[in-house]
Image 1 (cartoon, rainbow, N blue to C red):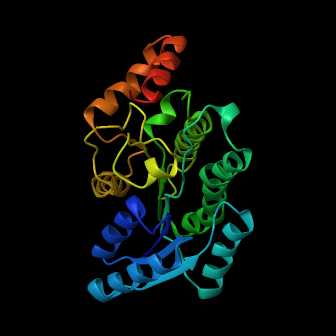
Image 2 (tube, rainbow, N blue to C red):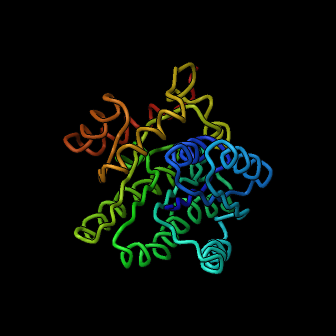
Length: 259
């Protein structure tokens, strides 16, 4: 049986990805900080689908814990066939008003951990001639984001990094997919304090499960970039043909607090 490693697996899209893999009888490695949630999910999926779910309680904003994930799986003899870099968070405030430690943690998790995990597990995939990597980006990747400047920039990194290595890996049997959803129902808005922004307040948002299903389907097909929702797709592509100052102004207006 193949094995999928999922970061941020204790809820939201991470949990939804775990359910999709388990349903397809793929073993799991579940990584997050929330130990009890992970253990409960692992037990449920093992009993329901008769797969093996390994739980690793790690905070991936610390690079030494990223290394620990790889070392533990190596010691257990577990080969990762699917890598889902799902863990990440944002912060809703003007940059000069933010706490630096939160910005640093965001950069570590959204960028460094994702890149390092890819670097650690990719050689094994190439050697095996098979592997699929899904990196959770965002429609935020397509423009600067006043009010969430570091988050938007981190997702631009994820998108560009994913596209570049997807090109490099042609012919190896390994594919890379960047999933770029817009806002959806999750704990993200609460964690990033953006419940009052025009982007999400009072809006009917897609479910985390629907976003995960969309990303999962495109990852399995080997799509390089997938954007859920026709409007999101049109807006993401329209940015390329619009003046940069206008793009930033629109993004800034969308990020403002709703009155």
